[in-house]
Amino acid sequence: MAEVATIARPYAEALFQVASQGDLSQSSEQIDALAAVAADPQVRRFANHPKVTREQVLNVISSVLKSPLSDSSMNLLRTLIDNRRLSVLPEIAKQFHARVNAHSGITDAKVFSAFPIEAPQLGELIGTLEKRFARKLNATVVLEPELIGGVRVVVGDEVLDTSVRARLAQMKSALTA
Image (cartoon, rainbow, N blue to C red; front, side, top):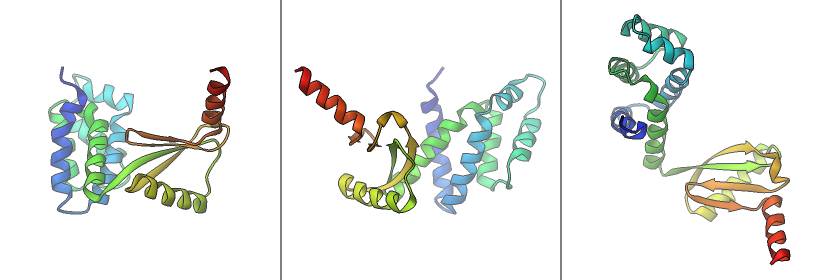
């Protein structure tokens, strides 16, 4: 079977082409909601059951969502159900967001911190990181108490580690060398 990313790419590209003519933020919210529903194991079992019709799957997924789907999102969902590709939806969402970020010049960043970061501190940190990485960042904070203190930032394939744990590892390496 083809790799999930390979299957998802044309769907994500088509969704981006349609969404870029309208409201990208609405499409992003809807694809996130669809991906969350499609990732649920019970929904997948229901969708893959041989006695369940495609229309039943569509109705169940539509009823679970908080807001009604746009025509483009409904068409995507209907196409995925018809082609038995509902399980690919989370990867489609991931690739769609990457395409939206590339279009708007934004890069996703994960900030790992030992402690919660307050909004003003996070704003300052993001400003500093944007200068350091020379691009606009969409930061997500992940708590990781093992860092002891400081932060570790992952932007694409670049890592900036200023954590206490990393400094202790460097000191250990220097002392044992």
